Figure 1 (cartoon, rainbow, N blue to C red):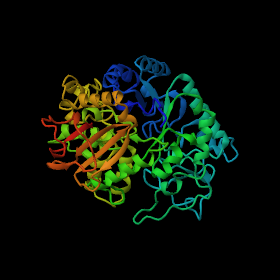
Figure 2 (cartoon, rainbow, N blue to C red):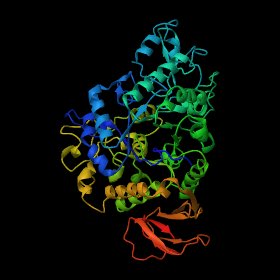
Figure 3 (cartoon, helix red, strand yellow):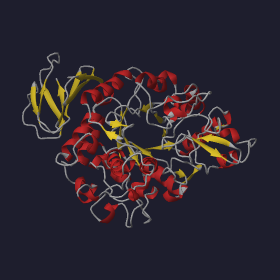
Figure 4 (cartoon, helix red, strand yellow):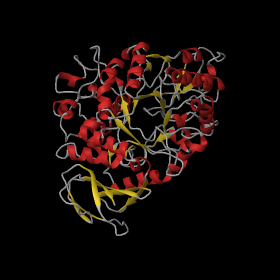
Amino acid sequence: MRKKWWKESVVYQIYPRSFKDSNGDGIGDLKGIVEKLDYLKYLGVDVLWISPIFKSPNDDNGYDISDYRNIMDDFGTMEDFDELLSEAHKRGIKILLDLVANHTSDEHHWFIESRKSKDNKYRDYYIWKEGKNGEEPNNWGSAFGGSAWEYDENTNMYYLHCFSKKQPDLNWENPNVRKEIHDIVRWWLDKGVDGFRMDVINAISKHPDFPDAPETEGVDYPDFGLVVMNGPKVHDYLRELNEEVLSKYNIMTVGETPLVTPEIAIKYVAEDRRELNMVFCFEHVDLDRDYINLRKKPLNLVELKRVFTKWQKGLEQGGWNSLYWNNHDQPRVVSRFGDDKEYWEKSAKMLATCLHFMQGTPYIYQGEEIGMTNVKFESINEYRDIATLNLYKNEVLTGKRSMNEIMEYTYQFGRDNARTPMQWDDTEYAGFSKVKPWIKVNPNYKKINVKSQINDENSILNYYRKLIKIRKENEIVVYGIYDLILEEDENIYAYTRTLDNKKLLIICNFNEKENIFNMPKDINYKTCKLIISNYEVFENKIDEIKLRPYEARVYELI
């Protein structure tokens, strides 16, 4: 296995709108991130992935870009970005930008030109199709509800938007589009950024026939992803991007890739294919979610272990995993797979332990390190996320579902769970801003905040610091081989990591009951040493352990 700096790094994701407001307008900004760089250095992270900061009308909070070489007004100026890049680098922290290249904003000058006429030179920068029998070109549904096609009166044609109608999809078949993207990526790399997270990058190659998606019962417009993801030329496009630009810099790349399996993912990340360093998969965060009935399902721990193990083993030879529980699109993990009430602290630490000792690069989402939780706003009017608001419009206003059903689903899975302001202290607005923020603060900020944890040796925050420190000081945590044990146990997630003659044992109790861990007979060891735990441990006997609620332990076996 080849050693790389990005394999040995820990990434921290910042959602800039909600991280820190420096100028008192209620919106987080680049100078706010600069203010908190010493905190991030204290935490021990190596890389900051910053959600989109490019010029945008913010239909989808920056994932609709109108100018790739300019900074969003809400976030500051290019001078502010240059300061952030310089100050981060001074602290040994790298910057990963969020590249959205599957689509642009409809306010990007390419699209403004494209929709003017059929013979405009930018027409083929986007995907335009004639209607069929007075309807859309096919049955594809947008990720945010409704059709993925929007009729444009000006030229009597439809354009494709797999997301919001203000996010028209780029036509990567056009070599001029690919050259434009190459030039943008090169421009930022020459400025000194250290890599990119690439938004829905496996959607850039559409099937040339644009076939209908498989019908789904109860759904008017089936999921476009079933036809679009991992399209016929996606690897050609990524290899070209790598060959022309990425390979010329010492950077890291991670692609957001819905609907991939390890067998598909290895084609993106195998080192000899020269495409991306790693991808984000979604299997583990889809296990408790019923997308059709819009409900939460109980988590099946055996299935979660199967999914993680499949990915750990599938990318073991020549690939690399990304490790995450949370991001800007996912609910808070302590509320989801843990217990955000009685066992809030213990379960947050357990979940962190379980993830951070696997093989791969860990990603921490802002606030995860202090155990931030989901939020329940009283009114739909307090939500800001386009996906949540469209769900309300498409389901409640059409009479398909009740308000209670949609609010309950939003409490469980709404993206705004991740987007409430970072909780820095217990002052008004949680120290995020001095004025009312763009979205409400989670009311529990007086209890859950950085200030209350930073000087507490036993806090969740300082537990994350310990996990990061252990990773940096022990090569086995980065490069050791993962092996699952107790596969069928419905309560305990236990696995080993092995490197040369060293072995670690990781034991995690995934519920509020006491459970017995019995050491498998085929694991040989003479003595053991406790590396980290989320409870005090008084005995060193590990053949049989009575695990307390949400207990986690890591041992070195000798």
